[in-house]
Length: 259
Image (cartoon, rainbow, N blue to C red):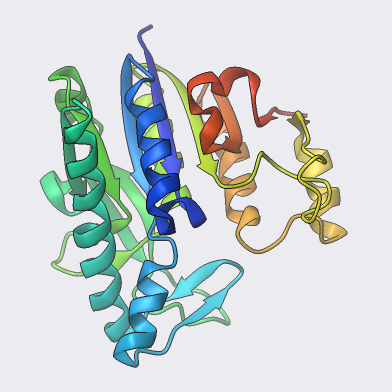
């Protein structure tokens, strides 16, 4: 099978122009078939503060009311997405920016939680794999923003880690897929304050213990949850690591493996 790499970028990298440019340099040199999924970093939160829009996070996930939906759509599918596309184009990459509503790419359902009202947050229900494959085979490098839709005209904010996972899982039926969650840390850390405490390998049993003792929390929890789910859905390899190591991601960061 043809190899394909799905990379998710987020965290402080997007907020720092120098770090983002360094990441995109590495990404543009990966070669082969690649897909990039991005979050919004702190751009949306910073703009919300400037506009007086209140924001609330629960376990690393944004509560998205109507005002926040407008905000994240503008920032994620607009400003951040097009800045990344423009930068990749300047590096000779045939980048194609889009969100889940474009070409009916990613359908989602509004989250229904028993105790938390997440607002206009969507959980992925279907990925248009045919559309993805057609664009990939035309040598387009897809840059996907984390905005989905419900097929009835409603946009939804969806976790970027989840989108990367679902896209990787869908494409694993046609490609040998490697999924890389790339952010500012060197990998999954035993001690969040100690950059040298990177785990080279993380199993589901070890992950459960780290969540229980608080070593894994907030933003890392969605990554690890999605990583193990991706493996269960046929994704060949999953790595959580630092953006600097993108070109050598096979031997860097934390390798996620089944127990």
